[in-house]
Image 1 (cartoon, rainbow, N blue to C red):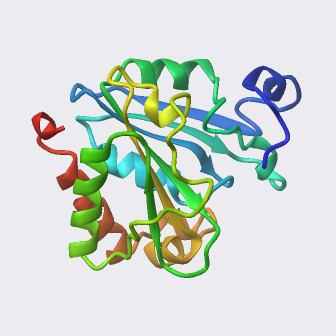
Image 2 (image 1 turned 45 degrees about the vertical axis):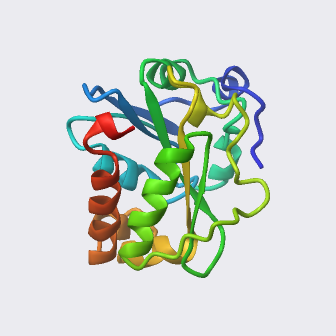
Length: 203
């Protein structure tokens, strides 16, 4: 999947501020939205996580900014150890991670250990016309307790995998310029996700 087994390995060969950037914003809701494969690694995930976080939820993104081979920067969710990202996750009650999977058709897979929140998000997404199958594709279940989505204080989070086909419809394009022009589909998904996360007492 990625070239490096740890952030320590990655930072020995990749230059922060040139090959990758790290973004954070602190909220006060107890929820953190994270995109650990943002930028050119899984295009669109940073923009989705940042918009869904708004001002009340915490936000973290690891953004790949290389001219090519950004897949080298893909650190596995189960072993993700970039210190600031781990700190953001541990400081939240619930972590929701945004990922991009490669399917060309439009689908959202939900994983993670927070069954109640997964069910709520699934129902709300489905009501808005998004396809969210009950059975998750193998490898996307997000049930490993070391998965970054499950490393909040409750030990339960949600992993949202959005297909390339759906991400294409959320922006005018998945390149850097296109991601600056979100579509109505983008705003529909963001508003639905934000509604699912508020008010936090429901979690």
